[in-house]
Image 1 (cartoon, rainbow over the protein chains, first blue to last red):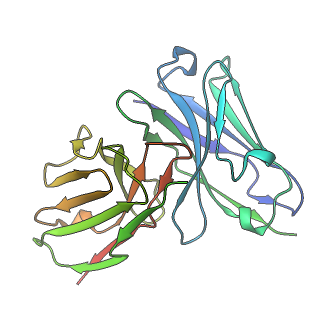
Image 2: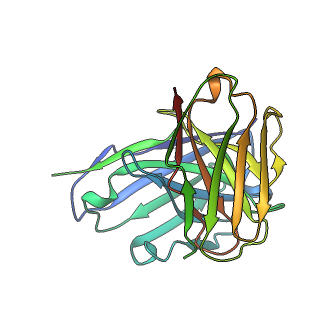
Length: 121
Length: 107
Protein backbone atom coordinates (compact mmCIF):
# COMPACT_ATOMS: atom_id res chain seq x y z
CA UNK A 1 0.00 0.00 0.00
CA UNK A 2 1.39 3.36 -1.01
CA UNK A 3 2.35 5.88 1.67
CA UNK A 4 3.20 9.53 1.16
CA UNK A 5 4.96 11.75 3.68
CA UNK A 6 5.48 15.50 3.44
CA UNK A 7 8.53 17.15 4.96
CA UNK A 8 9.87 20.66 5.14
CA UNK A 9 9.96 23.79 7.28
CA UNK A 10 6.78 24.61 9.15
CA UNK A 11 7.54 28.32 9.28
CA UNK A 12 8.54 30.52 6.36
CA UNK A 13 9.08 34.27 6.37
CA UNK A 14 7.12 36.51 4.02
CA UNK A 15 8.75 37.01 0.61
CA UNK A 16 10.83 33.86 1.04
CA UNK A 17 10.45 30.48 -0.63
CA UNK A 18 8.34 27.62 0.65
CA UNK A 19 9.90 24.23 -0.05
CA UNK A 20 8.32 20.86 0.64
CA UNK A 21 9.25 17.32 -0.28
CA UNK A 22 7.02 14.29 -0.52
CA UNK A 23 8.60 10.88 0.01
CA UNK A 24 6.71 7.99 -1.53
CA UNK A 25 6.91 4.42 -0.27
CA UNK A 26 5.09 1.35 -1.47
CA UNK A 27 5.06 2.54 -5.08
CA UNK A 28 7.63 3.72 -7.57
CA UNK A 29 7.25 7.18 -9.07
CA UNK A 30 9.29 5.83 -12.01
CA UNK A 31 6.53 3.34 -12.92
CA UNK A 32 4.62 6.13 -14.66
CA UNK A 33 1.25 4.79 -13.53
CA UNK A 34 0.31 7.94 -11.64
CA UNK A 35 0.79 11.67 -11.43
CA UNK A 36 2.12 13.24 -8.25
CA UNK A 37 0.23 16.21 -6.92
CA UNK A 38 0.12 18.90 -4.31
CA UNK A 39 -3.11 20.14 -2.77
CA UNK A 40 -3.39 22.76 -0.06
CA UNK A 41 -6.02 23.70 2.47
CA UNK A 42 -6.12 27.11 4.07
CA UNK A 43 -7.00 27.02 7.79
CA UNK A 44 -10.66 26.14 8.20
CA UNK A 45 -11.22 26.33 4.45
CA UNK A 46 -11.64 24.12 1.41
CA UNK A 47 -9.16 22.38 -0.87
CA UNK A 48 -7.07 23.94 -3.64
CA UNK A 49 -5.21 21.92 -6.26
CA UNK A 50 -1.70 23.32 -6.70
CA UNK A 51 -0.37 21.17 -9.51
CA UNK A 52 1.17 17.86 -10.47
CA UNK A 53 4.36 16.41 -11.82
CA UNK A 54 4.88 13.22 -13.82
CA UNK A 55 7.88 10.91 -13.51
CA UNK A 56 9.27 12.42 -16.71
CA UNK A 57 9.30 15.86 -15.11
CA UNK A 58 6.37 17.23 -17.07
CA UNK A 59 4.12 19.42 -14.98
CA UNK A 60 0.72 21.04 -14.88
CA UNK A 61 0.10 23.92 -12.51
CA UNK A 62 -2.86 25.87 -11.23
CA UNK A 63 -2.70 29.18 -13.15
CA UNK A 64 -3.31 31.07 -9.91
CA UNK A 65 0.10 29.91 -8.63
CA UNK A 66 1.99 29.18 -11.82
CA UNK A 67 4.21 32.27 -11.78
CA UNK A 68 5.61 31.38 -8.35
CA UNK A 69 5.64 27.60 -8.58
CA UNK A 70 8.26 24.99 -9.38
CA UNK A 71 8.01 21.24 -9.01
CA UNK A 72 10.69 18.64 -9.37
CA UNK A 73 10.98 14.88 -9.11
CA UNK A 74 13.84 12.66 -7.95
CA UNK A 75 13.06 9.13 -9.04
CA UNK A 76 16.23 7.77 -7.42
CA UNK A 77 14.94 8.84 -4.03
CA UNK A 78 11.27 8.30 -4.94
CA UNK A 79 10.52 11.87 -3.98
CA UNK A 80 8.89 14.88 -5.52
CA UNK A 81 9.10 18.47 -4.39
CA UNK A 82 7.33 21.79 -4.40
CA UNK A 83 8.83 25.28 -4.34
CA UNK A 84 6.64 28.34 -4.00
CA UNK A 85 8.40 31.69 -4.14
CA UNK A 86 7.52 35.12 -2.74
CA UNK A 87 5.15 33.74 -0.14
CA UNK A 88 2.68 35.84 1.83
CA UNK A 89 0.34 35.11 4.71
CA UNK A 90 -2.18 33.93 2.11
CA UNK A 91 0.05 30.92 1.50
CA UNK A 92 -0.36 29.72 5.08
CA UNK A 93 -2.03 26.33 4.71
CA UNK A 94 -1.79 22.62 5.22
CA UNK A 95 0.01 21.23 2.18
CA UNK A 96 -0.83 17.70 1.12
CA UNK A 97 1.00 15.58 -1.39
CA UNK A 98 -1.18 13.08 -3.19
CA UNK A 99 -1.08 10.38 -5.81
CA UNK A 100 -3.28 11.37 -8.73
CA UNK A 101 -4.87 8.63 -10.78
CA UNK A 102 -5.95 9.43 -14.33
CA UNK A 103 -7.23 5.93 -15.18
CA UNK A 104 -10.91 6.88 -15.36
CA UNK A 105 -10.98 10.47 -14.20
CA UNK A 106 -8.34 12.46 -12.38
CA UNK A 107 -8.73 11.77 -8.68
CA UNK A 108 -6.53 11.98 -5.61
CA UNK A 109 -6.67 8.43 -4.41
CA UNK A 110 -3.85 8.44 -1.84
CA UNK A 111 -2.74 11.31 0.35
CA UNK A 112 0.01 12.24 2.75
CA UNK A 113 -0.92 13.29 6.26
CA UNK A 114 -0.35 16.96 5.45
CA UNK A 115 2.19 19.55 6.53
CA UNK A 116 1.17 22.85 8.08
CA UNK A 117 3.20 25.73 6.70
CA UNK A 118 2.83 29.10 8.37
CA UNK A 119 4.05 32.25 6.67
CA UNK A 120 5.01 34.75 9.31
CA UNK A 121 7.89 36.97 10.28
CA UNK B 1 -12.10 27.95 -13.69
CA UNK B 2 -15.10 25.70 -13.11
CA UNK B 3 -16.85 26.60 -9.87
CA UNK B 4 -18.35 23.81 -7.78
CA UNK B 5 -21.16 25.06 -5.55
CA UNK B 6 -21.94 22.64 -2.74
CA UNK B 7 -25.05 22.68 -0.61
CA UNK B 8 -25.82 22.71 2.15
CA UNK B 9 -22.68 24.05 3.79
CA UNK B 10 -23.67 22.21 6.93
CA UNK B 11 -26.25 19.58 7.84
CA UNK B 12 -27.26 18.22 11.24
CA UNK B 13 -28.20 14.57 11.26
CA UNK B 14 -28.63 11.56 13.51
CA UNK B 15 -27.30 8.05 13.24
CA UNK B 16 -29.52 6.14 10.84
CA UNK B 17 -30.57 9.21 8.86
CA UNK B 18 -30.25 9.56 5.12
CA UNK B 19 -28.11 12.53 4.14
CA UNK B 20 -27.98 14.10 0.70
CA UNK B 21 -25.36 16.60 -0.42
CA UNK B 22 -25.47 18.35 -3.77
CA UNK B 23 -22.83 19.90 -5.95
CA UNK B 24 -23.58 22.15 -8.91
CA UNK B 25 -20.93 22.88 -11.51
CA UNK B 26 -20.71 26.25 -13.22
CA UNK B 27 -20.64 24.47 -16.60
CA UNK B 28 -21.40 21.03 -17.90
CA UNK B 29 -18.79 18.50 -16.85
CA UNK B 30 -20.29 15.17 -17.98
CA UNK B 31 -19.63 12.71 -15.13
CA UNK B 32 -16.20 14.03 -14.21
CA UNK B 33 -16.87 14.37 -10.50
CA UNK B 34 -15.37 12.81 -7.42
CA UNK B 35 -16.39 12.95 -3.76
CA UNK B 36 -14.11 12.96 -0.73
CA UNK B 37 -14.60 12.63 3.02
CA UNK B 38 -12.37 14.53 5.43
CA UNK B 39 -12.23 14.17 9.18
CA UNK B 40 -10.65 16.81 11.43
CA UNK B 41 -6.87 16.80 11.26
CA UNK B 42 -6.84 14.13 8.56
CA UNK B 43 -6.30 14.05 4.82
CA UNK B 44 -9.30 13.69 2.53
CA UNK B 45 -10.34 10.20 1.51
CA UNK B 46 -11.67 9.35 -1.93
CA UNK B 47 -15.20 7.92 -1.77
CA UNK B 48 -16.65 8.09 -5.27
CA UNK B 49 -15.32 8.87 -8.74
CA UNK B 50 -16.88 9.33 -12.16
CA UNK B 51 -19.98 10.60 -10.32
CA UNK B 52 -21.23 7.18 -9.21
CA UNK B 53 -18.41 4.63 -8.95
CA UNK B 54 -17.57 3.59 -5.42
CA UNK B 55 -13.87 3.54 -4.57
CA UNK B 56 -12.68 0.16 -3.30
CA UNK B 57 -13.29 -0.40 0.39
CA UNK B 58 -15.92 2.34 0.71
CA UNK B 59 -19.15 1.13 2.34
CA UNK B 60 -22.13 0.68 0.06
CA UNK B 61 -24.22 3.13 2.08
CA UNK B 62 -22.39 5.82 0.11
CA UNK B 63 -23.68 6.48 -3.38
CA UNK B 64 -23.31 9.17 -6.01
CA UNK B 65 -25.37 10.26 -8.96
CA UNK B 66 -25.70 12.99 -11.53
CA UNK B 67 -24.26 14.24 -14.77
CA UNK B 68 -23.93 17.51 -16.59
CA UNK B 69 -24.02 20.18 -13.90
CA UNK B 70 -25.85 18.60 -10.95
CA UNK B 71 -24.41 15.90 -8.73
CA UNK B 72 -25.46 14.24 -5.52
CA UNK B 73 -23.74 12.32 -2.75
CA UNK B 74 -26.09 10.25 -0.60
CA UNK B 75 -25.29 8.52 2.66
CA UNK B 76 -27.92 5.94 3.56
CA UNK B 77 -28.27 5.07 7.25
CA UNK B 78 -25.63 7.45 8.60
CA UNK B 79 -23.10 5.80 10.88
CA UNK B 80 -21.10 7.41 13.73
CA UNK B 81 -17.93 7.34 11.65
CA UNK B 82 -19.61 9.30 8.84
CA UNK B 83 -19.66 12.60 10.72
CA UNK B 84 -17.15 14.55 8.68
CA UNK B 85 -16.80 17.15 5.95
CA UNK B 86 -17.49 16.13 2.35
CA UNK B 87 -16.07 17.72 -0.79
CA UNK B 88 -16.86 17.35 -4.46
CA UNK B 89 -14.15 17.79 -7.09
CA UNK B 90 -14.42 18.33 -10.82
CA UNK B 91 -11.98 16.63 -13.16
CA UNK B 92 -13.37 17.96 -16.43
CA UNK B 93 -10.85 20.72 -17.05
CA UNK B 94 -7.81 22.30 -15.46
CA UNK B 95 -7.42 23.53 -12.88
CA UNK B 96 -9.13 20.83 -10.88
CA UNK B 97 -11.44 22.55 -8.40
CA UNK B 98 -13.33 21.52 -5.28
CA UNK B 99 -16.58 22.50 -3.70
CA UNK B 100 -16.42 24.48 -0.48
CA UNK B 101 -17.40 21.48 1.61
CA UNK B 102 -20.41 20.21 3.55
CA UNK B 103 -20.04 19.53 7.24
CA UNK B 104 -22.18 16.63 8.44
CA UNK B 105 -22.58 17.16 12.16
CA UNK B 106 -24.37 15.45 15.00
CA UNK B 107 -27.94 16.63 15.52
